[in-house]
Image 1 (cartoon, rainbow, N blue to C red):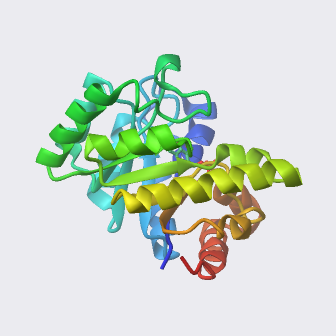
Image 2 (image 1 turned 30 degrees about the vertical axis):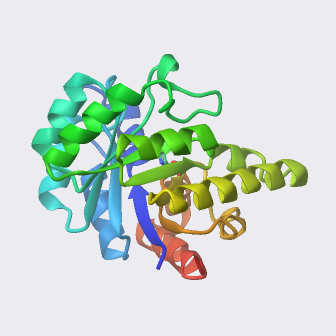
Length: 246
Ligand code: PXP
């Protein structure tokens, strides 16, 4: 069964738009996470950025305390945030690029160039009992390098697929890249997640990609929740996801 991790950063973005710098404010991303869990999601994803643009430190600790599913802690490979992760002990860390030099042309992590630094962090996290995922573009060089770090997962960046969804030729090209990357990763023993820009419209087309374990979806769910409520928005996404055959 394809699992859903709900990315709640966008809830914090709305709060920060009005309450930045304060210790209170609405909407509360932790309360949102609990609603998502009650609606049946399989995990909660939150990104503690170095610039604390949306999720704050207090959110992440409160999430750790209160959620019952898996915490997927998205983070840059920076010493400050690695220290936090080692104390926080999420079930899984997804390493993502935040600085220009860590980003490949397609927008994922440049694992190939940063192989030794990422491998070192992967080892620290493994020693702390935390699984590791690398957010990468569907590029064979990056998939191969990801396997060399010893990470258990990759998360395929679906941003280009989402961006080209309404252009038939572009969509085909991006879908083929995702299909090849998923097959290559599976052969190398990596588990395959995917995320970024996925929504109620483009999801079914993505199902041509094999070996998917979990999708991390935020923006479309939070957007839909404005009209139907968060529990229904999560429920509708789960309903769509039940059609994935692997
Ligand atoms: N996965 C990763 C690694 C991300 O950085 C994001 C965006 O915060 C997502 C998934 C979710 O993307 P979206 O909010 O577009 O669904």
